[in-house]
Each structure stands twice: as C-alpha cells, then as structure tokens.
Image (cartoon, rainbow, N blue to C red; front, side, top):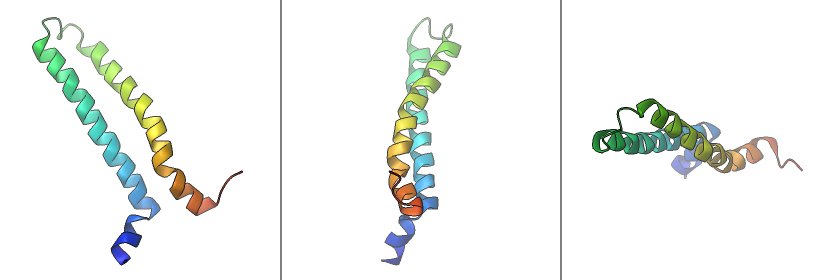
Length: 81
C-alpha cells in the first residue's frame, strides 16, 4: 500500500509525463532517422523533418500532459468549477 501511495504523488506523476514525452520523442525521431536513411532525399530535408517531429511531439504532448496531470492537480487544488 505504501508503494502504491508513493506512485500517486504529484512528483511521480510529473516524472511519468516526462517519461512519456521522452519515449514519444524517441519514437518520432526514430521514424525521422529511418526516413533519412532510406529516402534518397532524406538528407536534404533533415532540418524540416526535425521541426516536423518537434511539432508532432508538441501537438500530441500538450493534450497528453493535460490528461495525465488533471487528476493530480484536482487532488492538490480541488475541483475548479
């Protein structure tokens, strides 16, 4: 029970968000690297693909962060109506 209670703390919740962000960026960047390696024009478009990776990461992470932290902030500050 003590371990489960530790996992429900705000600090662990924020670390989970960081972990999800890192894994998501790693996956998206891996797709970019595959495109650079196997697409003959990949090296020409490295910079644009990097910015596209960052944009997709941000578009996915903003709502994901909200949904992952909403319960933590409700527990800390109460329900905001």
